Length: 428
Image (cartoon, rainbow, N blue to C red; front, top):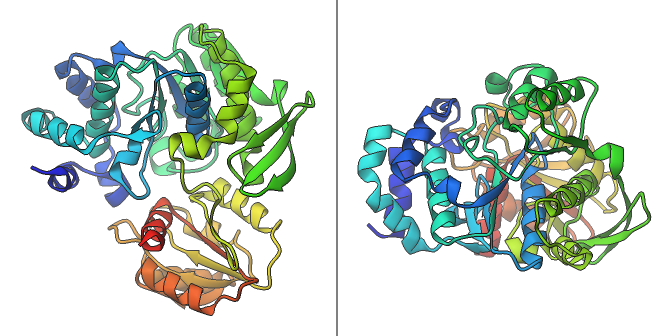
């Protein structure tokens, strides 16, 4: 098989949650343990940091990785889903896994896949762990896929656990209260392993405190020790100030990143206690150059000027609230929004958060989970939003670009898949 055939094999042979949803979700660690045992447990051959949370875990994972890279460590980074290329999920020092490594892993493990019947996520996670072990990374940043307690990644014994925040998402799997969701996320807290909590609510803080006490893990709530204040935008970067009056230039835009930045800085302080030599200069360099160092995309990503075009992967209630807050800080003649959603989200709640004064281009990604553009348009009209439906992201982009003036603002979002397809179309 070549690379394209190997990726197609993974999609066709293994259930893929991000494409088909709940039928691909396999809670529990039995499959993962069987898979990794057969591979001689590669996850035990490198140090790691485990990052969970409803929102922000991708940004925090990339920022921590960038800081460690700046300190001259060899850093693995495992995240999901990808936006453009499958290999975005598995990187070392920002470089995507080589296509031939993917081909070889799939070819060498077909019999194992037939025996264990892993999900797509379990198989690709095992690929990442094997790759990081073979390449002898100094440390790997491992982003949780869904939840925490029963997530496939919860087989590692990390140097540090990080939980960015808790809000409503995947309630069918994680529970319909913040306490229940926090319980699932808190499942990554390990015995004697310190944990950093990026944002705590009155409902979730006791859950984290109880779990940490149960396993004798030290716990730090970021808001108790560090807060960041937005100062200004300088080009495609953002200047922020900490409560102890330190200024940082950040390679990510969006005021919603303030808590993620604080979480990253507090996490780095904890990582230093594990023996990693990270100077303040390394911290600053990593934060300022996070996208260049790690390849991060889709976080308030500026795609063009005149008109300004921005894409963001926020896709649940809390994520959309952050996006809308950011939109409120923009100036423009007219706001135009290319928007799509998947059918297992609380779409009605999300639509009711969106600005009423925008022109909408409702669309759908080319995946089975996508909510049809026509259905989305109908639901949006009930929420007071006006626009047209387009059956592909390409059509929606062509329309919005042709209609926008140079002083308009175009936002693209609603799901990872809309952003991913938009990036592909715009690159082409």
